[in-house]
Amino acid sequence: MAININSLRANRTRIDEGDWVWITAVPGLELKVRGLNYAPFAAEHSVVRGQWRRKYGDAADAPPDVVGPALARLCVKHLLLDWRGLQKEDGSEQPYDREMVLQPDFSAIVDYTIWAAARVSEIEAEYVTDTSKNSPCSSVGGSKTAA
Image (cartoon, rainbow, N blue to C red):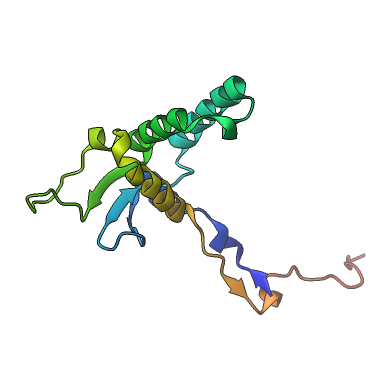
């Protein structure tokens, strides 16, 4: 069994322009997000992680009160484009609000954004059973040239 090489291509349109993702942990909530490998996000995230490594010895050792606000800022700036399915207490629809996402009380939205962005970046490998179509032709003997 082999994998169709073209099925491993990243969907750059989906990653760069975003796509709607149902948040399975919260039925009714959809987020429109770019993929985690959206170039501006990946570059800035790498810089931030480098700063954490220099300051804390390992990026994983950065405290939550440092990581949370930084991820919220990166998500709002690069990944989260819109949402559907949130409503205010009065029952009206809650429009997308970047400033709200930056508030620590709404860190769950950041978590869902990261999760959804990972889904947008996923590929689905297509397995093929007949590999003979993809195999190069073997040459037996050699080539003959006219004398």
